[in-house]
Length: 131
Image 1 (cartoon, helix red, strand yellow):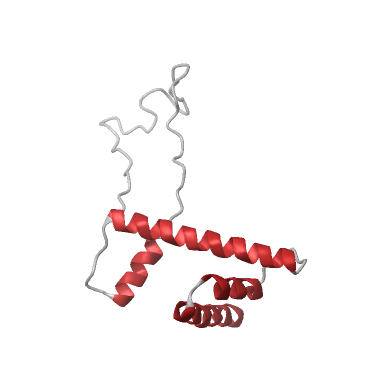
Image 2: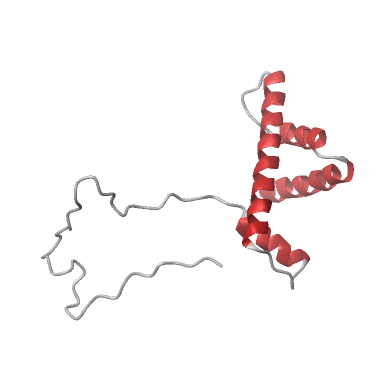
């Protein structure tokens, strides 16, 4: 699914620094970008994939579909967080508790979906507090 870049094998000399001596660094020309760390992108794709395999173990998902699901989850998360924030401001509290999240879920999600989300959320909070 994801590929990792493996470090290049060293040459015949076996040195890590490329033969420039101990601790020497190669200079980069002015204006050129250094090959620093890549910006980490947080996605829900691992969790989406795990749930998909629990529900339909023989079914896969394309990258395009995974991106759509990731956008969907980010959107729902943002909407729920915004609604919960509004509720905490109404109640004049600075802390988002499970009560605000629960109320936001009831307000934002339709009927049966809200009931399932409530039961799963209650189960997750019970598991967290018992551990």
